[in-house]
Image (cartoon, rainbow, N blue to C red; front, side, top):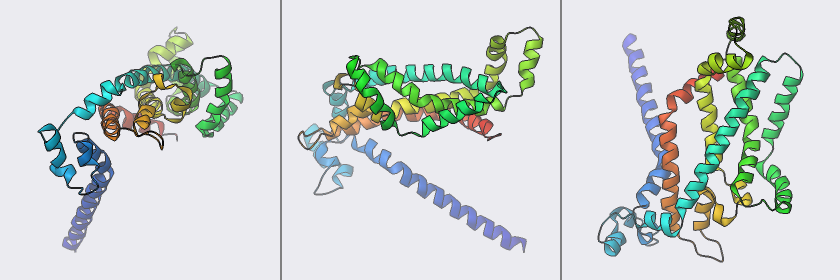
Length: 293
């Protein structure tokens, strides 16, 4: 009887393992294929005659003398000025994350410790604001930005992204602060700390997993955004995602697909490494925030 149960258990484990590996291969295939193709020439990666050219590098070998080439990266970063888009992305991301976390931690801490009814309505208002489509919010900013002649520059885009991101950051950090006992605050106050000192020296060291989690979500919003940055930035100040879209071309203008392929890999790799580096803190932060979810 036990032998039969063990056999069924091993069969189930084998099935689960095969399923998970297959799912991971399917999920990772687009990026792996794009990464592989970024080191080929267009005639191979976008071949209409034989898809195997992307593997064998038939045309890449003819054009460059080698099976792998970094020409697409060099051309995209310098001729296509992807370096400028990367710089703009870093500036936008750093400011959005910094401002969102600064305002979010202070606001979420105050709301989590407040006993007033207005705290609930502030959170509801933030939730409604978060649920609105981004295009709805951006369209309201366009006309005054044009009138004030501040359209197309990075600071205005940072303001809008912070406004869009703040409700989510507020809710996420609020759930983290609710898991921290109020007795910690009270003990610090009894020991002579002010409210700000208690927040800074007692609460924040406990909150780091939650802050890192909220920071990564804020980073991904600013880093991956297309709607806001495409509508509020001019071509010279584009961030990476709108810049990649411009490489794809339009009906009237032929783009450079290999620039887009190499730019996609260049934009995705740092984000992947960052998430992997902070994975433990993110998991810790999400599980902590879910305790009272």
